[in-house]
Length: 290
Ligand code: 48F
Image (tube, rainbow, N blue to C red; front, side, top):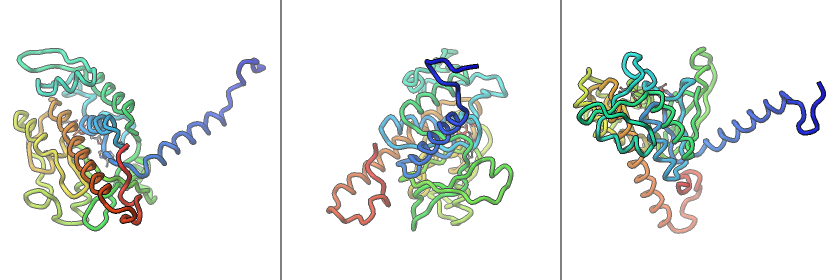
């Protein structure tokens, strides 16, 4: 059939080139960032939202096809989650509906929660790469300064293919229960972590009340340049799991964003007070956030 005068026939080569070019641009823009987030579960996505909103350059790597981690399935596949009073303001800020249940408990449709947080993070400027796994960190002397990534398909097929690397001024471990990134660092560097034993303390069984508080308290730096958030924070510092209540996850994501932004601000102030030319390679230290 002849093409109309208004638009030409669809050309599959243009479609392919558009995808390849746009993805490549996005990937290139992620090679040198302020913050790399490992894992797009609730804590990682919330962190990405607050970082991007503050104009930090933030990239998120997620192993799976879908973002959202353990939030989609609510509790045992009943796709509702519970959020307590403390996190209600955060949900309001993200324009996610929380239905009062009783005495400070709210329920949220799990799909609205995932879709809402991911949408806000992306619209704020976070770049999310699904189907990409973090397999290692970049290290300079005694500081983590980026992540080593590969296609999840390479990992799944167990192919012998070398990864690529991304520089980041700070890295956030948000891989949830398995605490994958911190464990790689511990395996390769020994007892180097800022935990009581210097090693991963390990996750304990379920105790929602304690776990919800400690997941926020344990959200902190675990090695220079590397922060833990969400369930990873409790797994790293030896606290309990909480099950399908998500207030702690959300508040932990917000807290880690605040901690990282504070560190970046200090670095920026120090860099500005250096005499001109004192830094031989500004790319080594990254530019100001924005
Ligand atoms: O597990 P996950 O949802 O972590 P979270 O943000 O939230 C925990 C809760 O879902 C729940 C809970 C609270 O009630 O206990 O479990 O702490 O999301 C972690 C994400 O990281 C991805 C994984 O696919 C998931 O989407 N992930 C894990 N390892 C890697 C990774 C990796 N090496 N590289 C990239 N992504």
